[in-house]
Image 1 (spheres, one colour):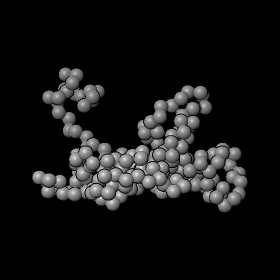
Image 2 (tube, rainbow, N blue to C red; image 1 turned 120 degrees about the horizontal axis):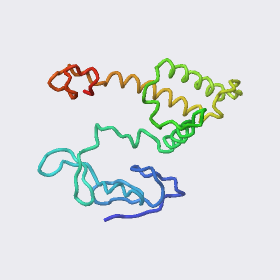
Image 3 (cartoon, rainbow, N blue to C red; image 1 turned 60 degrees about the vertical axis):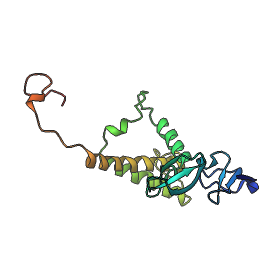
Length: 192
């Protein structure tokens, strides 16, 4: 049985999607509330699934999925409005001085971490200056705090990307003349 109640003044937040509105309360299974939009994804409770003895999520339909305990929660860790604003910033900065539009992943080709650090500090200084209520004097500074923050995210993410890329790079495979694709046995110009 499912009871419904209205969220008072839209201030109650759904524990699943953080939306407001009509709240659903599952009387059978677990004392939890969810909004009418996500319906708690039909989620009722965590329980040991019959037959396998593994802690699982059990849904209203009877379907089961593995537990979310000890798993990453990108939906909770990230904010869609921040990601969207960052995408707007990145889209705006695809335009190059010569009028060409760079690919969205152009930065992943590789930028030295020293360049990311210099950019990070410049934008952090601009943000800090504005945060303290002063006007930024750098004529090439971003136009506002949102732009500063997006630039900081870009530089921090780029720096982290370069570190992770180096750590996770697959090791070079040793040369195997029998696997030579051009037949020369040299393979210095062959894709491996």
